[in-house]
Image (tube, rainbow, N blue to C red; front, side):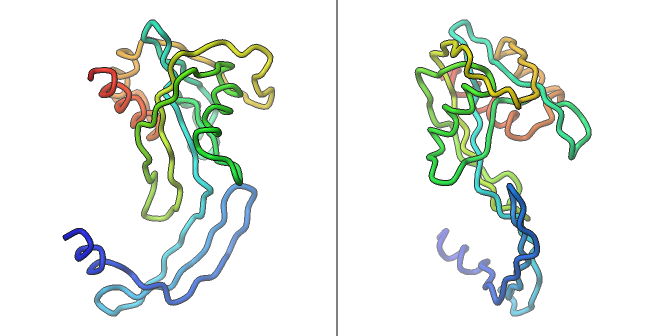
Length: 184
């Protein structure tokens, strides 16, 4: 059934033009043929993919980062995250990011989900993890990271999600998935 729906909705790419090559992203414009035969243009942001983790301490607290996000003009509270580097597996990326951002090594990392963040215009896929058995990793933090660490009980972070105080999509998804996982 899903294959039939997929074929019925699929758009055929007729042509593609690269319009921007940046350090992190590329942008292309595709001309597509819609299932009804009409033609349309799709502007697509190509992204190498990302990872994020909910670092959960032994006493049930999450370690979040607060950092300035220039595109939205505010400091957001987020779970640690980063971009996948060429040739690096997502699991290795998140282990590296945890050390760089929160100076912790995770003894256990469990996959929560892989999600498309903005499939209407971006290819970005983010892999979400739950990181536990955290141990300090002194001297390994990335000095270029301009962040503040914020530690709070998971239940408080979940309340903030519920009340709309967490505004970063990957953070809300990660915290809610971690809450479900911890609830059994």
